[in-house]
Length: 254
Image (cartoon, rainbow, N blue to C red; front, side):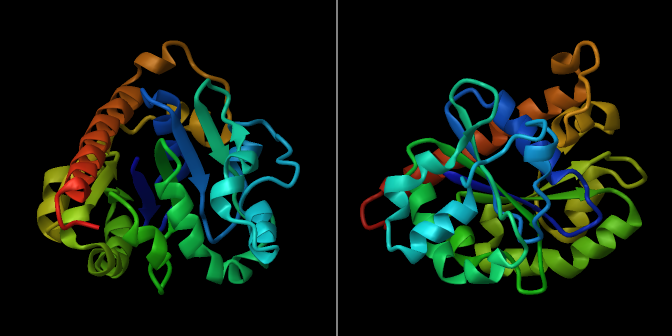
């Protein structure tokens, strides 16, 4: 199956909310991964209402790496239910100090996710000055960079987007614009940065907060403009994932 990365250049545009919303609405079995290198455990504390991972997640995989246990054999046991059937969550780092210790394990994680047998959505958090973990980028079918439409959002995007494009290749990078028209439109933004806009998310903070922090769901949440936009983006990402799989199946492709 395919691995799809979600990231941002800064200013908290809603990457985690989008990741959870995509996972909840994805039509096939899916795994959501918290690979944020600035740990905050938002999904556990928010959408999962303070769930205790009981040692599961990237911390558990780090221990397996130290014990030389293959990730492929223990990945499923390190996940927790996301609250919906066929949807699971791999918790992130439980302590900031784990991030640097995980350096040698990213490649094995990338291979295990590629072989997970279902679509994998990776919340990679913010792009750092070093970019994203190279192994995750190399194994991904696409990198969706989430941005707001304010000038401060676009200033950060100008700084960090080139790192992602250089690592993934322009054909595997797209933008997701949150709140288009506040004040810049998605078309303007895509043209300015020379990167296609894969989707937009309506500016509906109340609806987004349900997925970001576990706030009570308003009426007709699943028919809201925000969720409809998430579903539309999901279709685009699923198509890109299918194209990636077809490309890899071509003779002579790895």
